[in-house]
Image (cartoon, rainbow over the protein chains, first blue to last red):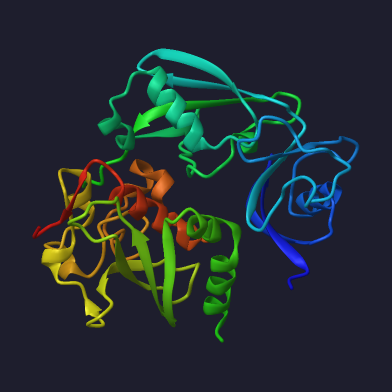
Length: 165
Length: 157
């Protein structure tokens, strides 16, 4: 029987990272691992932990098993309870609050509906972080882009690139 | 084991690659260093292949980057160009067997394709291979193409 459980961790400053935790570990162990891997949250702050697309954060004192964390679960560590996401497209903007463990793919799906993109056209667009050339992968969780204390993220919905030249 | 292979093996055990595996985007098939064979899932269609295998040449990974071409797993040779992915616009530009003798994909993140395309660095900054990049940069671009509405199945279908 395995004595560890693998978990996909993300958080502000922490790109998707696969870590191993003791099978009888606690949520606090997971936060500690996230800090060791580069989580940009001060040592004096107490972040929450979300399973991907869960509505509420996990109870901080619980064990991984009690919290429902299984092998290869995807979790997010953040101090923000919601990330206020703005998406810009064709000189229009829409905002929506997402939990930190929502993915870029979730945001794109929401934005496609909000901007009335035809289903056939959705794969021809991607989200790009505002004022950058960064086009994150769809499994990146939105909390990654939100500074603790600010709790905002901004994307432009842009056409996929065509390689020419 | 050489350092480049060691780093590659660390990367495929890491979060970005394993996340793609769990999401059904790609799957490692084999490593015969410096060649690596990875299956990339394509959009589901009853008459089209469920995935394409790619042969990646990864010598001096990750510093030198990688180059890839579609591969025939059964015949253990480059995939017949009639079976390369086809499409309307974006896909045939990248999967273009008429370019460079079908040796690689026409992509800014391909170490062979970028030769002679110095303007790509500014045109496609998100697709440029950097010394701290990993194989998922290339895989994610290919997966996106094979799961887009631009993709229309194998060229000869």
